Length: 91
Image (cartoon, rainbow, N blue to C red; front, side, top):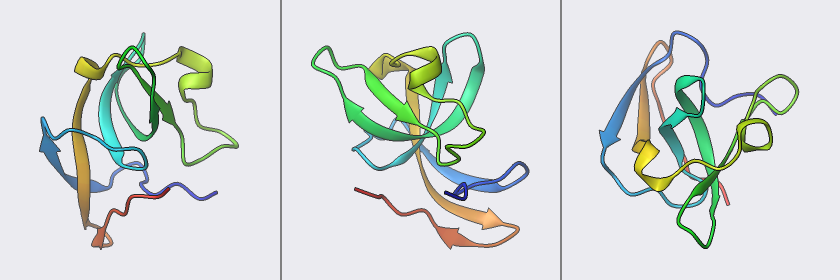
């Protein structure tokens, strides 16, 4: 699958917005700093399983494990540069 966002894309993020499965989110990734991933599902303990839209070369929770809900910092809603587009939730 082609990634929804690419290096250098400028996005509007709703900081503190609660994610839902299928949303593109900004999160603190264990041992990696900030990253943009798709929220796949929430585990019973409240941690999020995050996936990469680029399954051939991206990293995701299969690599670094689930992310505590407090480390999911916001939801990406729109890419405004260089190709404006609303960021859709996928199910």
